[in-house]
Length: 136
Image (tube, rainbow, N blue to C red; front, side, top):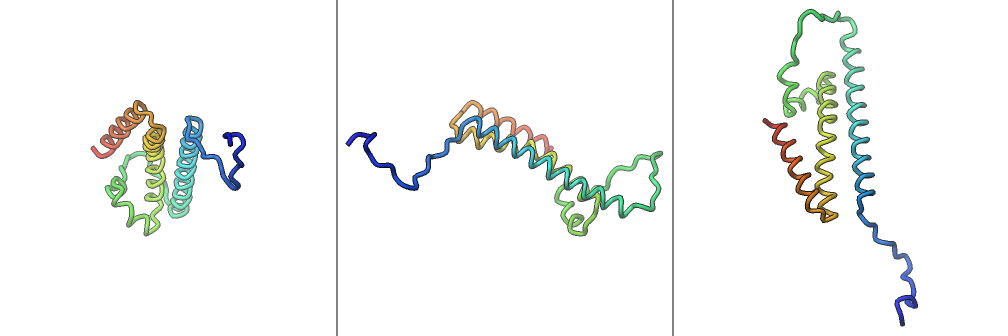
C-alpha cells in the first residue's frame, strides 16, 4: 500500500504551524489588547477623578508632584482597593508601559518556538535591558 492509497484518518486535524505571519498576528493582537485595556483603565480613572473633584478649582500656578504612593506599583494595591481615581489612572499608565514589554517577552517565546536563535537572543537582550531600566 502506497502513501497515496492509505485511508485518511477521520477527525484528524492538520497540525497548526507557528510561522512568522502567525507570530506577527499574535503580537499585533497583544499590542492592540494592551493599548485598549490601558485606555479603558485610564478613561475610567479619569471619569472617577472628574466626578470626585468636580467642585474643586484647578491651580495651574504651582506644580505639585504625585504622592509617593503612586510611584511604586506595590503601593498602588491598597489605593486601588479603596477605589482611588488617581491610582486607577496610574494603573492604566503602567499597563500602557507594560504592553510593549509584554510584546518583547512574547517575541522571546515565539522566536524560541520557531527555533530562531538570533532573534531569540536579540529579544532576550532587549527584554533584559527593558527590565533593568525599569527597576533602576
